[in-house]
Amino acid sequence: MAAWKGLTTNVLSHEPALYENSFPVEGGTYENAGHVSSQIKALLKGMKISKEVVRRAALVTYESEINICSYARSGKIVLRVTPEHVTIEAIDEGQGIVDIELAMQEGYSTATDRIREMGFGAGMGLCNIKNFSDFFRITSEIGKGTHLKMVIRIDKDFDGI
Amino acid sequence: MHLEDIVKALKLRVVSGEDGLAAEVLGGYVGDLLSDVMANSKEGDLWITRQTHQNIVAVASLKDHAGIILVQGCNPAADTLDKARKEGVPIMVTDMPGFEAIGKVYNMIATKKGPDPST
Ligand SMILES: Nc1ncnc2c1ncn2[C@@H]1O[C@H](COP(=O)(O)OP(=O)(O)OP(=O)(O)O)[C@@H](O)[C@H]1O
Ligand SMILES: [Mg+2]
Image (cartoon, rainbow over all chains, first blue to last red; front, side):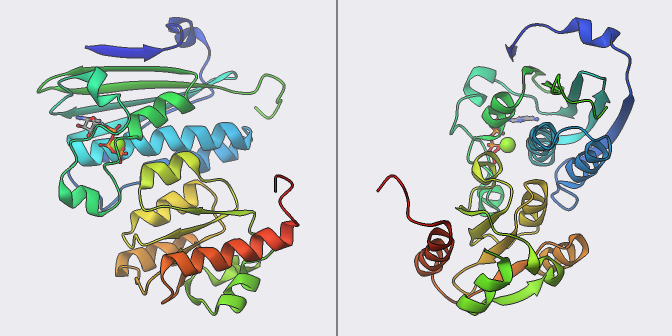
């Protein structure tokens, strides 16, 4: 099953990467939740990418990271920066999503009471990710895991990187 | 409007991020749902909430908030405090109920900005 936004951007893989790295995310705990997002935000800030792009990238990374903490056994976030795009992939091993269309609906959440008590579980994470990305794709296999890909365009007229 | 002006006027108890008190407060946001705050709050906002879990620090820091006010006598969890101190995120605590705290903060920010042109 899959859902997406924007054009398929296979062309991106041909752009030379200025930066590429993978960050492990622990599932089933919030102990380090947000840590990878903070790291990625700091990294992007150091690359002199516009504030707005950094903030959007931080948001989509955070929501993906929290979903791995909440719903998966383990996962990773892969960051790839080219002169024109920031690409973030969140890949996890876990239960997967039975109905992606439903999961993408604002307000739909399977979060437990324990998760909701901490302020998660509004059912907004995936919608936020979609809204704040220029390109977004989600695929999932039940019992195996979920794969999100988000691409954010770096301002064309910004010569920071 | 600087954060320290609001702290003084409302007698808020500062429990972390004292170095950030000189920061400018550009606006405010109220919410206990983290995804809502992530999507709709802005840089320089003073975030008013009842959430005390350590995840509030990551949210405030990722969104470049001026600080967090915990209302109704909610105290930050120990790991929240550790993290906030490490990351220099100002957390302020007050016994005021949310409604009262929000109203007072709003008035301070709104009067500073001048009358709302839409009214
Ligand atoms: N990585 C994942 N693995 C398995 N299920 C997932 C994953 N990500 C999301 N889901 C499912 O999709 C639902 C919606 O996710 P979404 O992030 O939009 O909202 P939420 O996590 O429930 O709440 P919020 O993000 O607002 O705190 C989740 O409740 C969960 O059932
Ligand atoms: Mg979520």
